[in-house]
Length: 120
Image (cartoon, rainbow, N blue to C red; front, top):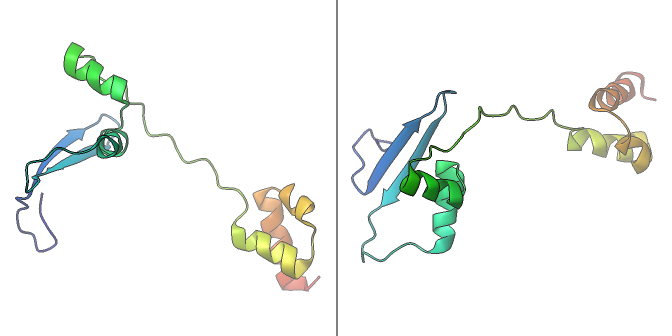
């Protein structure tokens, strides 16, 4: 690994795993100055965020050579109505909260566009 100035980083040991779906999982192990161990919360965060496995999957891999099944990254679900659109519909257009909540993303955006172009 390199730092912002393109120098080698020597205060971390970095491991990378290239997955078949194109993702690269990367974990860094800092060299602690007092050689103490990391706490359980740090361990869980590393498993979840850097290695993308549960603790059970990790230990099955380490002890039994069971490779964790990592599915292809799922596409992010389409977002709902943007917050600014909701705010505009309620506070400027004057549509009740319940009616705005029942609108699809497309309906809400179309209604805001109508308000901006026609003023009604």
